Image (cartoon, rainbow, N blue to C red; front, top):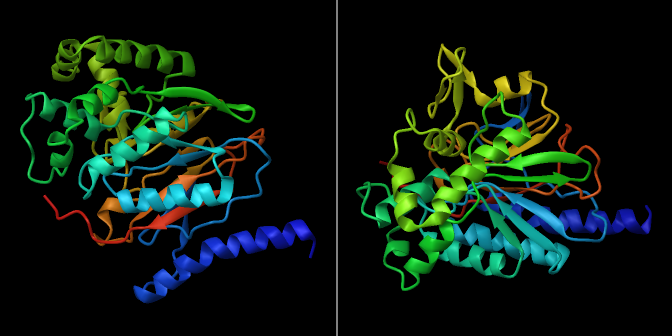
Length: 337
């Protein structure tokens, strides 16, 4: 065995052993993968904490699925990143940092500190939209909302102002491939310029003023194009044959948005979250990272999932792909509606 291979093996074992002990203590079997029609998905028990490939020098992007108040798991992920890369990493989070879990405020403060240091980027999710509307008095607090710690925080105003300025979509490159990071979905017919135009229009209205943001969040999506783009990007799961989208999973008249997107043969990739029932979704051009950390114990083992694509890979969205870390949820957080 060469020296580099020995080093990689030791690194992989350092990652795997703590999780192996955790699975044994909790009486769980090792997680497993189930192939899907269009790639690899995690079902029920998620995906083992894969060791990423050896990365070249430089800043490593770490794409992170829905955190939803799971602060302990996020902090464990950050600690693992520091152990692997020192300060040479960036978190790219797909939104829904808050709600359903126990520590939304701690998650926001952790991510904001990283963002202020130039080491985190995050897009707007539907739960951040709910937080903003609740804080501004335009939405009643729901029975299963758990972001009251944010509403009562001393830095509440600064956090809300920061959140409303988050991008709706980030359009960038990994290696040699264009990609978009969004919370939930893109329209199957959108190319990257169309997505960017729609996202920038929404972002301009949200950032203009609190009053302008409130008007947009209260607008009818059937009458306001920007409101429709905002709702689709943060909430969509399915699209029917006539192009109408829904926040619900596909039924007899619809299909997963990403199947119709993939059928278009787009050259860009999409990193997204929002769909915990689907689990980790790995398919050509697609990385769906919501593996339901906050819903641990509700029919599946929850994980906080991170994707670590190689910076120099000319085709990072190809499959198979094993460049994932998964942090097992520490408790059963969500109490149900």
